[in-house]
Amino acid sequence: MQPRFQNEIMSRGATANPAEDFIDRVKEALSLTRDEDLATRLNLGKSTIATWRRRGSIPFKKHAEIEELTGVKYTDVLVERLTRSNELYDICRISYLNAISKLFNEANKDELNELSFRLSRHEDAIARIIRDRVSEIAGEHLSPESVVALVHRAYNGDFISPMEIRDILKPSSEGSAIGSAI
Image 1 (cartoon, one colour):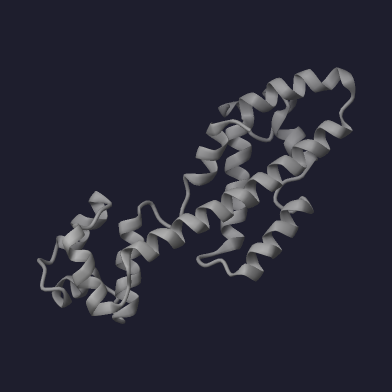
Image 2: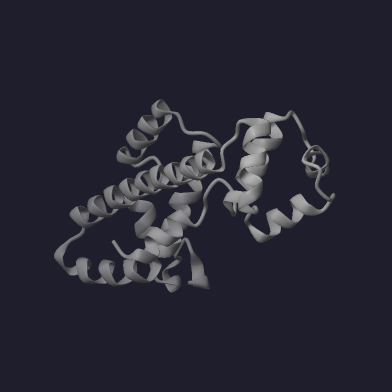
């Protein structure tokens, strides 16, 4: 599997950056809803939290101060985020490989080269479809039970079927599900 497929799957974590995850977790721990309230609680300027979100980082010296106040560790949030990304990537990869192997097994010898060629051109679109479906079902937090359930669904072809991939791989002149955008 090509690295670009992995990049497409991994490009959608819990949020766009770990600072957002951390800030949201800290607000939750303090029962706050607004960034401005968190800034006040941490004796910071009103726009400081928004700046951290925009930059995607929080000054290291603030980590210990926030941890002491809330018990929320920045490193724990990072580890959870990475674990979730890896689990979602693995589930998406299982779904993709399962559907592709079924598609290739159903294809005749004349179709294999053409399918391989088209697959290499449309792999990112297929990855986006799978990623979006898995992420929608996975929700915010993955328990061990939900990971197992998602893996079973991936093996069962619930996220994408060989027929759906075949439709995506059709040339746009034959009515591809993706159309001429690719």
